Amino acid sequence: MKPLIKTRLFTPGPTPLLLEAQARALASNFNHRTEEFRRLVRETIEHLRYFFNTQNDVLLFASSGTGAMEGAVTNLLSPGDRVLVGTAGKFGERWVGLAEAYGMQVSKVEAPYGHPLDIEEMRRQIESAGPFRAVFVQATETSTGVTHDVKALGEMVRSLPETCLIVDAITGLGTMDLRPDEWGLDVVIGGSQKATMIAPGLAFASVSDKAWKQIERARCPRFYFDFAKERKSLAKGESSYTPAITLLVSLHAALEYLRAFGRENLIANAALLAEAARQAVKALGLKLFAQHSPSNAVTAVCAPQGMDSGAIIKAMRERFGAVVANGQGSMKGKIFRLAHLGYYDACDLFSAIACLEVVLAQLGCSIELGRGVAAAQETYLRLQSPALASVTA
Image (cartoon, rainbow, N blue to C red):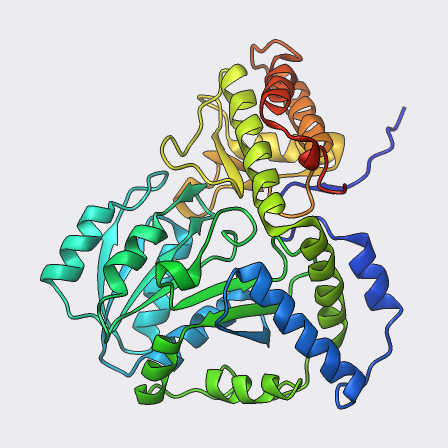
């Protein structure tokens, strides 16, 4: 018998889509130079401020999140500027690559894959090896499932008038408590295919007053990702260039949904699912890749000894239509990653763990079927509140 299989995404981007947002986009028919569309853009920016938990300007670009990352480099810096990058995975390495591509002098504080940054070492570098024009870091290192202490970094940098803190929060937004204004996070970057529950193609960046002053002095070449130009256009409800109209309509609808559900509830939902996943993994005798400061956006799991994680990923997809992520770079084949950000609820997690148990058993692992699911259920019962019974509530 050939089983019926539905594809279900458990990847940390793209994530499952909010159907209401998709439907709104399909029914829309906008021209971007109309007052109706300008009103939608203004409302979307205000919703993004709520989502980012900031009163700062929030910019919007038709690109992946990496576009806004590159924009942060080109808008805040001049060639030859000294910068500090905290790197503990593929996306920290992306900050290094972007800064070097534009001729910056890059100093690094590195942590092994699976470990958070040593914040005291970051402090020592800032105090003894500076001054730096910018400090770059991830809120969540998606490639390894680790969270960095951006609050502590903000406290270090906010007193330095010539230094800005730039945070890639592409998977941090909607999965962890972030307070850009209170913590001194000068630029915070997000992307549409994560906790906002829509398709890839939009990038966001919040920009502090301190960062705007630095932008005025920066001399890197820029054109499309020109923060000042986009700020001026968005103030009028427009974009500097042709916008991704369908995605903007989807974003507006998704942010309305998230605002009604509540930013804090969205973050708590990810935290609940992540903790339930971690307990399920331990109950199955598997090892968590991130032992300290694990992310609530994604759980990274070590493959059983002697097994390529690709075999687990292939079996999950072929047998159940469940798409989980492999490791990246040197971790490919060694770990697999299960996401919790955005449009996931407890039923999604329970089913993913049940599928994982079957796959592991068929691949020859000695496990007790149902043990991981039971651990996830017990954690859910212990932690959940009525408001978080489902992300669709």
